[in-house]
Length: 409
Image (cartoon, rainbow, N blue to C red; front, side):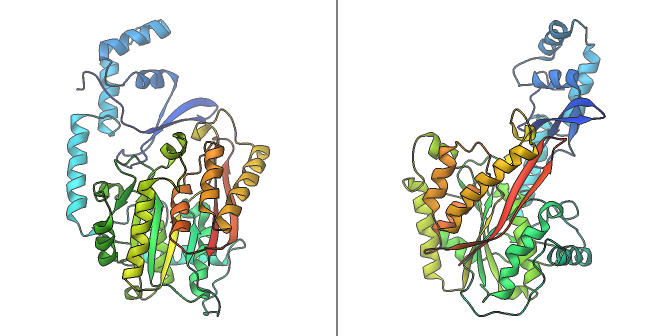
């Protein structure tokens, strides 16, 4: 029993069920067995579990706040339940986590962590699901004949769950079927959890229900050798991160002969510290060193490259920390701002794009702008074409996410 229990760094957001206001706790890293929902009394107790308050302190706080006596046995039972579901930063959780880290680092392959939940987990069902995204009313059609024209050099693709964003993925990846095809894909993906460093590399291949996607180990090793820091130190962040996994699934669908392509998977952390200190992205030494290393490695290892940003756009509403919303009117404003942002992307203006986010202090919570920035910086004079813009919204639960598909030539 933890004498001073501490809740792990998990998401907490308001929601409703049968007219009752609840707080949902969800583990973005996927270690907890599932989300849990707390009424106002349980939420009060959990909010006091900061690692400094003892159980007696929490019991006394509850008495002062409610005028009711909470039996210690009930509080201890709550702590045991939270620990059993892996919401506590406890000795038991640290042992569980340590075993997962060792298992992940020892394996040459990253498992398909979200198969069967965010997308179909069986090969035939997944092929049908993805094929449906191409053929539905919002999809681009299948188009498999190679068309003459400028090769695609990059993509902006969503990383939202397939059932919410499938047609947008299809619009992005169809360009690989109708344009001369790359055989090396540098993947920049949003990392949704904290990392010690700004980037995370891995040499692991990516398993999918459609077969293995091979990581270009030669490229990754040469890239790492050019960098001033060890960006393998956060490799475990790749284990549960969905942003790159979703891209490998679509790439494997588009490439029926897997030996014809490889990927370079790179997770990217936040850039908020750059603009919060009044600096520009162009003046950041770490970003500059990383971009130079990628570009120099591309020059050293000839191949047909494309750079893919796994990037959603705005996250708005109560679920994401806003005071209210979203509403149909607020989403109209969000779309307007999203499209202004995407104009910078289409123009290949990485610094203008970063400046746009900095000027609004990222009030729309655009989680995908760091991968998009790096994608633009790693392509010579890119020009983009917006293929589709979409919004997913649940007004009742107070959440909306926006995303887009764009091809870069």
